[in-house]
Image 1 (cartoon, rainbow, N blue to C red):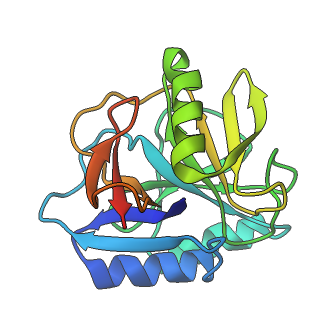
Image 2: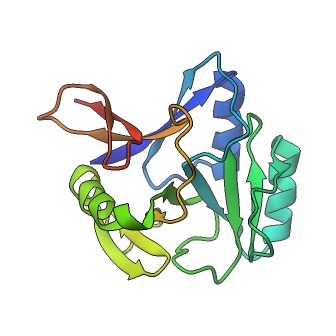
Amino acid sequence: MLTGIVIDALDVARMDRFWSEATRGQTGGLQLRFVPTAKPKTAHKNRLHLDLAGGPDWEAQVARLLTLGATRVDIGQGDVPWDVLADPEGNELCVLRPGHPGVLADSGLVAICLDVAEEDRYAQSAFWQSQADWHAVEYHDWGVRLRRSTASTVSLVMGPPAAPKEARNRLRLEVTQHDWEPGEFLDASGNEFHVTG
């Protein structure tokens, strides 16, 4: 079962504070767990990022995140109907505006986005449905969306393009599997994920 996201952090306390305030504690029951690292984020886009709901007053939400320490970033997204920011350590995040497909809440964490190459989409969908115990609720040209249930406010969205795998992912999914040994493993596309007992 998908239980959380593990995030590498140079300053664990600062990142925990930022994300707690950024999500307003609304994570759909998922734990954001910060682990210390000495390696800063590289210039390359992360393969996994988090999306927050902007709600009706999305401009104020973006301003609030900027006040908390986020910055605007350009990852080549062009003119899109959402705002791309980075947390205080450079990890990308998106603020989704009202009417964005698949958004079922006005605030908090609403999507975990995993880059998946087109040719890996079905393998990754099957893999994460089995590991997360979440179910596919949408299949489109842009990818697939999984949810714990149809009413769950947080979804796992997988689709292209996949950022090149340069190093260990800074953000990683965490699952509970009682029949696995605890540790770090690789998914079907070579992305690290954590297993707890």
